Image (tube, rainbow over all chains, first blue to last red; front, side, top):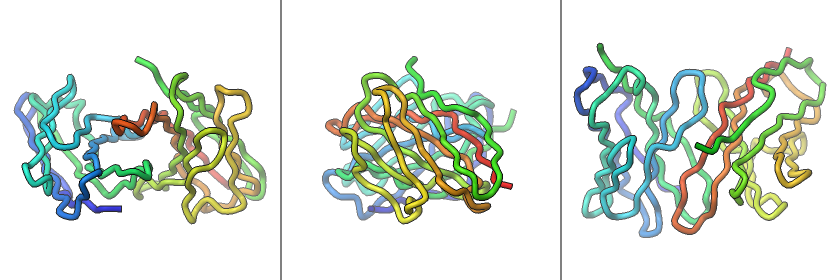
Length: 109
Length: 115
């Protein structure tokens, strides 16, 4: 499985935008970029996914670099409830998700 | 919004006992998965299931583990003879289809404690 690299942690202020980076330099042409988050004591939660074009949904935006070797998850206005571990995962034809350590996002009031 | 439901939320069992963890995936989903997360560690893939058979399993998923979709709605994970190291959160997930690379929906998990 192609790997992703994320910083260990990030802090943000409430109601400010947050940009969570992810590097995936070995991505293949058929890999989708998925983002999930895990709040304390809960199961992973789907956030967003994309292939080549930028994507928006009610939770977040996903900006994908033109060469697809990196992407950024954007939370437009962080809330305290957004404090979680965010996982950037490449999902290919074999369908399973391989979780890394993710990035721990802390939100300051 | 449709949910994946897991029961029980917490199970305590004695070492060597059999346990069955239950999941009700989203009704029109076709692909089903079990993952586990030992406290403080990464979420690990156990098994994927499609069309009433296992499509992929990890090294963790040895002969002590089995999965079943007995009645078209439930999806179960059985651990035949539990060990202390099986203590973990177990997450069920389902996915509508592979084409278009749909997102996964995870349940809130079953915390298994083996004593």
